[in-house]
Image (tube, rainbow, N blue to C red):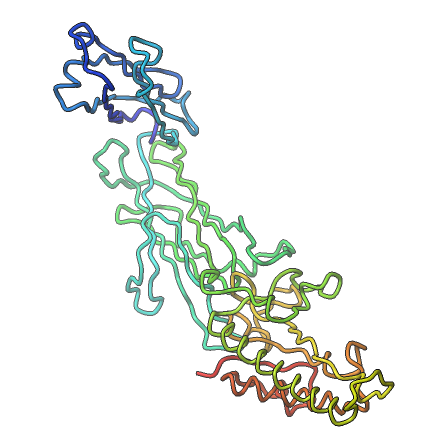
Length: 419
């Protein structure tokens, strides 16, 4: 609500006596009080009238807030506080409202997502906030230009909402929440593109457009207005959250992610281990199948080379293991561009890791390089890699990227669900 605006606050009361009332009690009046900011308002209610109305009534309280009331206010309604009856069936609750400085004019926001080519409305958001997926990247996918239109109209703040001219507005892009990104170099290249053709608001309204960022986060179009009387108009901000977090689920219980190992990742620590439910489902099947294949292989090798099961120094026995499957990265928790170098770059193959469908599988556990699993001349490493590739393909996971496939000499594979 704005100051100097008269508002009606209905207060509903009910009374359900636990015992029949005496004539003296029926003739009693009880106070109903509304505490609003620095003032209080009281009305008296006849118990007889309350009972005659079935035990419930609604009382209108008219309140005009003053400049001293600006801020968050709690309105508390009480009935019969400390008065006639000692019964415990009197209760109260409260509501909160925010009081703003009110003037002669206000600027009304109308926020929509539009098709940037046709201008047609895709979705309406009222005055905001906006929840939308980040734009697709120009570097490696079919680029998108998701666009938010903000129409601003200046009107009289007298209840008529009559449009007026000679109002002005300024805008600025802010970044109140960086979502999954733990870095901010002070640049604004990742904020998206805000276009404002003029400071003047014509009587037909002023159109601002905001092309959504490729990076997930919460962005704010901050607006400040000025009325024809050269007095400030509080407009507020339009919050635009770019995220697909509701479409993603953690994968770190299925395999080990580099970003979750302390000291091993300089790119988005404790992030990047999210994928779609489809990726999770097929990955779970693939890893279970891989485990089964490896354990079966290991069993027959042990049985063939050491049928007694007694301790042995045979390296072909002692090197048998179930490799710990690791991932370099999947997607960030909010989705969007995954700039592994923290440079706000939208190019490179890693741009595929934006919507939870792509996953990198590290090859480091399948060879002696990191000392995790010691294989003799890589014999078992080759076999285990073959089993992993077979398990992925059988679970309908494909390897679409050149130089990041099982048959390529590479330090990781790039996998995603087949369509």
